[in-house]
Length: 169
Image 1: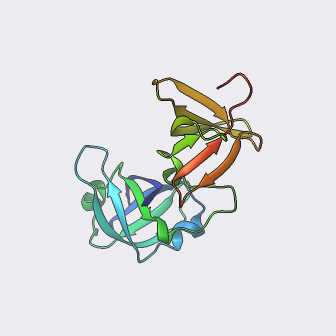
Image 2: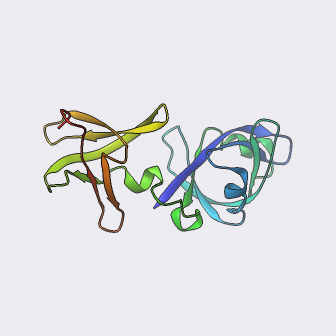
């Protein structure tokens, strides 16, 4: 499994560096230095692996360098690529927090065992997330992720147990 960690923007300087918008704190990404990561172009070209050589803070974005990328022209070919790191290289999250890629696509069940659907995504709504579940009949069920609704996330068993608020199911 790979975790999306950021997006590359445009070349920076003359040595093949590129501006990098990270979705994580600098030290998390810095710990990936020397690792092979995956870049996914936004132009439909195939994803490819590349060694992450270095990263440093910039004024607005971090500045990244990749092995074999030594000119602005080479860095320009990486513009708008999404950046993914192997899950095993990412830090474990605190109890009750999950990487998007770990939970999206998992089946969701009612505490009684009945299938609710498949988790298709989530979004922030104030101080809580709302989880979107596609039901068996194709409808979308939006469930606020609260202690009274989220009962269990079993990553090993590949399932989620949620109890929608009264009147939602």
